[in-house]
Image: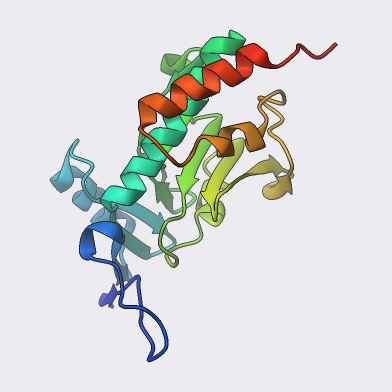
Length: 215
């Protein structure tokens, strides 16, 4: 049986400030009891337009429209990661919000950003998926990604970048990426706020130039 929930992503109490305006929060709708065929049909109906992102987990379907703030943060993070890779000479191919899905695993997801180390045309799944947590709630993305073959999931939340590494069929939290061990998350975090995205990228490049090489 199909049921429907419209889930608000911000609540207010008598002692809390008014919720932020709609452009500043993610909007989510949940559909329960969705078959894989219905999920595929919705993907086909939506087409290549990614204004609504879909996450599917064993009959549960989340439709999420990211806020402007969410999109701005994920783009800033992506530009910083890509600038770092350029400075370090790392072959990193971006695949945006690649629709990852497996009927056998009953899972589907569209990351905020994702990357392949090497040739993206030969990849069956990204090596790295990036998720920005802007408003709480929703399907557990780690539970979705663990059966889609994504080796690392990077999560930006509460002003910090954390890493989750796929080991033995589950994700283990780590202080750094195993795929890009020289990437210092604290350096990335320094430039995730203040100024424009271009200012942030320039600041990161200057910071990398000043840092002495590790022996």
